[in-house]
Length: 634
Image (cartoon, rainbow, N blue to C red; front, side, top):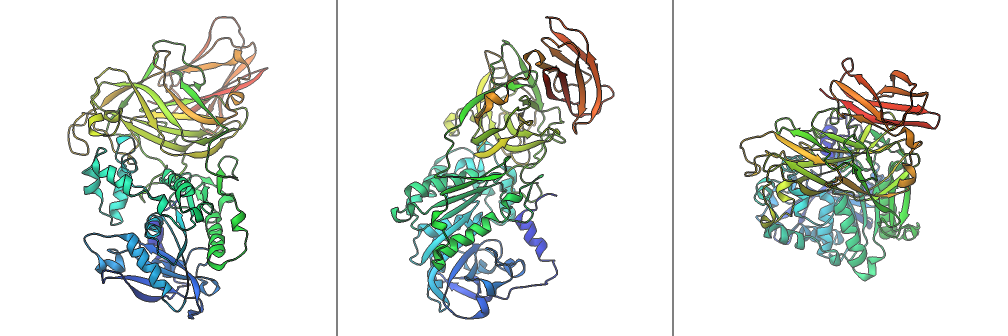
């Protein structure tokens, strides 16, 4: 079942039978300019006893909390809460639309909300802030203004900085992201599309939106490995951990879980096609402990918790450290080979390359990943059925791992490429291939060729058709996963990932406008002169890919194939057996191999009776077995 975005989920909530509903006190909070923000006040038992308060500032309609309940494990049981809640609509949104002005300083609005709360009879002068995404960003802006009665903050899947790569990763517009922001009422398209290269606008935005030294309160930051703001969270945490006020610097903490932007706490916790029961309610329960420690002076041991707690996917357990770091791992270069293999060896051939055709009218589709648009799936989804079964993608895969391999950090792909057009894109997807053939998406990235040298206007240049260029494709995010024994690591290379990223028209002309759409023939090189590879921060990798039997190493050509495929091996062992399996591991047929010699052996078969899809060849001998993946695409 796909995860609905929080916005669609909230909308559906309006139609649920109102078995329970909260009844807050509606108030108008005065701002310094004489305007008012509409807000709801939730008081336990409707009394005026002084309590600490949780402030939530939202652009997504404060009234939803009447129907869907309050966070931090309160739900509809407000009388059991040790906190008051104040939920305010942002200026210019919903109940606060009348307060809209030409220029808005949301940090000052947050300051005024915090100080108004402190003046109320039901306040004990301590206020914490909570919220995800936009509700998290405004917490940083509020903290920057340093309101005297702000005690602590819990920003979730949010960071401080607004930068060029947030909207144009690899120089390519995040199409679905901007579409969703427009649907939510931010109206940013005109502004963002007016600044397609890194210019003075982005320089000012980047320098003015990152201010960790202005943070003077403890923060508990929460992020997700499948979220689109992962790097923003990690950057902001590292900033406040090292630069915030000395008195609170040691109190900053971070939680990173197996979450998407819209799923950080639910039961059972389904993220994309995977379940993570070990992470259910971790964010809400720990945020509650954080608030109880700072707002209630509860001696609950929060101060003794680790600085960083992170979920190691694959192993599916929680680890901790004094900071988010990737020390102890080694950056391995995994080289692509023309037979679809990926290993530590630089290709021995001098001229191997593979081509893909990229048609902007039929781009490689987005299936899962760190998306925001509510019509798209979010998180880890199987790429095999829809993405990898097409003929516009190349897949490079390791041998099955013989032991668990830990990855922590941020991968980068290094390609050697050419095209027959003046501009095009190269897209990367990193997946975890399960023994049953599922290819679960972990990270993705893209790079526009005109931005291969940088993102300033002076950096851009057209391609010369047929010329080979080096190209780095950043996958844009850290992650923490253990590839389990029997799994394989895979890289998919294409020229699109739409609608997550804009489609390149391939004409080398103005971007994001109507114009000629050309089909590009793009080439990826994988030879000793021009090698393509991905750099992964790994542990245990060399030991995990030692072949069971060097004599049994084999390749499948062509891959993908259409009418026939050929399995070649340096030397098949006598009485070894070749088995063809479908994507689910079901045996289609097997053949005994009865000859052995020192020259390459080959087994060739037609695919005429096989439908398009993912398949596996398994060769078994007295030394063990090796399985490799290939696809049939017509």
